[in-house]
View (cartoon, rainbow, N blue to C red):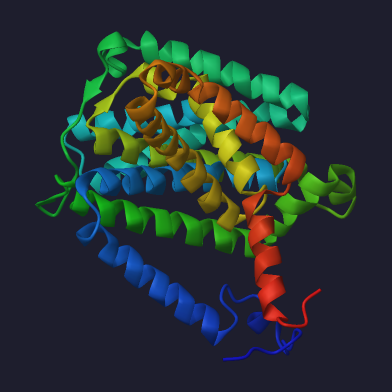
Length: 348
């Protein structure tokens, strides 16, 4: 099977397709088939890891839309997930159907995100990052001292989600539910990036003065970016809360925000596919380190305890190495690999 060398689009509609070639459509179809068969092949532990990856993909693509595409740095993303988790959790506790609860959690988080996004008109760069960090700290305080609204230090207990009487009370059932939400979030952000809003976000990120000169309403589009990103973060938080069955303030601390920021940096800023790569990498990294520590403990028991203690250090070192040697992320490396094989054996 060979492909054409070059671009041969004759209409804007053809150029704007998500999957412009039949080969790409075939590969995506095969990939989806593998994903659908995976929970029947993997054990319960591996299935739970993939479920966490799906939730992380939604949160990562949400932050990438705001930071990678629009250029608005946020250090409060973890707290926005918490807002969605608590809002959806309270809806479920009071008898609201699952899908309506998740949607409500997303809308509440969108409103909260837009409130904290108002300073983005005046603040940029590190100053905006400090403002979103303040949002993180304020929301953490609310989570811990919210009384009956958040459960305080006791948190909230949730039942497994249910749709039309069908309960998602097993890992396999949750797998397909989370897969559907993750696919929907990726498709949503992909289409936003292809629209006028996506082009406006990119123009603001590249140089806001030029964007304003050509008529882009900075305040409006920045608020939209915060709103859409926070909505998806709220959906991810609501899904996380219903998946784990328990919501507490400790889950949504500054460490979670840094983890999501690491996902989009490692995966690739401004790339939907990079959000997927980054989420997979960050979720699997602790599992790989755990496997290494177990393997080392079988041979050198005295050293194993130090390997476990170095997990956070390895996380930071990994992020630094990516910033130095692969600043454009795994998505850029994937594009280079595809470009090489597209012209093989004449690639150079």
